[in-house]
Length: 409
Image 1: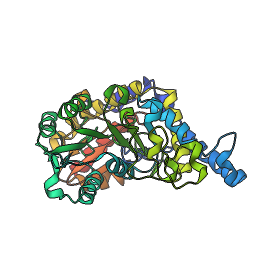
Image 2 (image 1 turned 180 degrees about the vertical axis):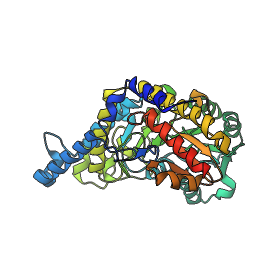
Image 3 (image 1 turned 30 degrees about the horizontal axis):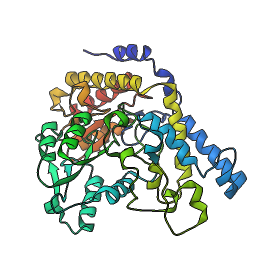
């Protein structure tokens, strides 16, 4: 039987324990909800404070401040972000929100033909992705009931890669939008396998990496997919509603954005104030309006924490934490009918563990009253997310212990 001291012993040997002190940990709370919203860190808070001080002292003059200009702030943050996801400097831009970026990518790259009008998603897709895709089908006067294809889930929790491959080969598919990590179950899709399959089928592929970035290593240069998009408020800890990000493969960087705006202009010509759109050379062309600078500052600060470690070490700890949760759940919760729906194989899971139980909602509320913060998803899923930067094995132990107690009542 796993004991509290076992968890504490694992924490004592954690090489990433120094990162925890950088975060503002809610007093009296075990926080295991980082795949919904990551915690505030001292570097993010300091970066926001510096931006506010700059605004206070220089007002509009800060746009061209020689010390730290707002005008190209996005490009400088995006260069750091590109390195983090294994992309070329000009292939990544931090801008917009996850869904607005998906709209931009669809507006730019979805070009249906009579032979290939359909878009492929999965039946477990995050609703916002499905909503965006349906809206673009309608804009092209295509009916979602006919032209939105969905890869079915056999178990209601995971998507089989072979089923995705078969759907990619089906007649009529022009584009696919798929999750790197399935938000409900935490399944990590085999991205290289599916990217290869999409290329063989002649289907343009975009990955939603919202539940992957910061939790699993991403290398878009090696993957060579068409595009990707993601948020930064989960494992990247950039704050609620944080500025999002997108990657566009360099082979597509000559495309005119479907949704053009003045911050997508060539920087050297942006202030000529002309009506002719001359796009930036890289992914910056897909920006629309002025950047959300306070949000970008938070991302800049958050990214600095990844310089104190590396994504491989974070992934290793994440796998150890989720494996520890599996063992605890098997020992304490399976007897109450709790079922793990997250794939157990390390290469098939992301950063969170999902448990199915008919009383999931009531359990989440009961343990929240005891200071254990997890996440409930309908119809009956408890998501437990130990974020490698700040979560501990002891916190995982206490969470499962609290669920055990709740299930005995």
